[in-house]
Image (tube, rainbow, N blue to C red; front, top):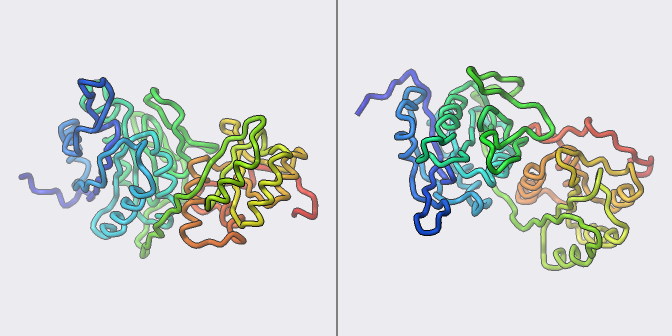
Length: 347
């Protein structure tokens, strides 16, 4: 065995399956789980030149089936091994990768080391795989003097709470939502933003996510009784994808009042791709805002949903959720980008 280079940084890979490790099933023709993390060292043996690497298996599943269970395992493992490694690399499927990166951003906020998440659109066993470049570049970022959660994919380095999957087939499958890219990957690797430096302060993760949260997309004619039914079934939080800047039909308003009476938080976002919630411009949004809903401003669906799940599990009470949801904790929201037209009473 080759003696480790003590001058290289130590990186822990947390393996969770995904397309990067999948194999085509000869009977069904569909990709399913087959390979493990040892495949990475066959894919590109020279990764050991980048860092001294260890691998821990978290799971081996399609990320479609990932839940808060795997997120919490990631957090626990990073907390347990925090003093033993200089950086952490998570490999998983792309379908829910942006949810994972957002969730970990909240649970690991304040971390003084890089946590990098990557995957692939094409399995590593295929000669044209994008997994090789993604893996190598993610390892490079995991050895940098950074602190925070990041996504490395294709030509982009993205802040974890701003990542969004935008294509099922492009090799640049992710984009930065409502913000500029944290960094660029081309011949070199360029960092565009300050404020995410590594540090040696004591770190303590805040783990845990409430999974009893529901998201609904408004369509013409949707009956508000469906929202009441979810509340009566014990849902802990609701997310509504509203029209335009956050407009909600008048027929839905009684259900929003009911949610307020039951102290069930309702987060409102827009259905417009890349848009921001600016309730109060139109009367339909103004009246809805008056019922006590929380507008998501420029947060992505991934960020707002995992943030709500995380805040609920941390024990934040209904009365404090509006302030916490709209507080910029790790770069996930910028309320200054939306000019909100409110009456003095609502202010």
